[in-house]
Image (tube, rainbow, N blue to C red; front, side, top):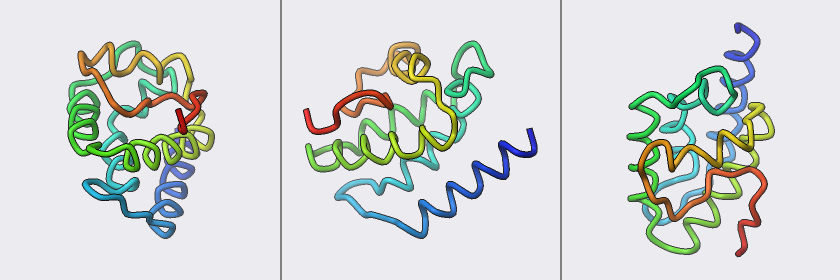
Length: 113
């Protein structure tokens, strides 16, 4: 558990350093908001907690252009590989939260389509 916290912290620090701003929401803001969903996304929790679902809704609301959606998609993919996100859990997240998203939180999707 301690190792996962250290890895998560390291990844967040790297992402903040490499901050890439997009119009309505930065990629780092989106990743920070999704941190409550980490237990679900890494298969340690059966269902996402309400703060995670709120984050999904907020990220969706800030994803107002195709450029933002693509940038967020790419950053989610980068973070997912480093955090050990389960692709199946990532694909289920928006449905389980009851949010129809414009940004796929899916490490296997083509972000350019």
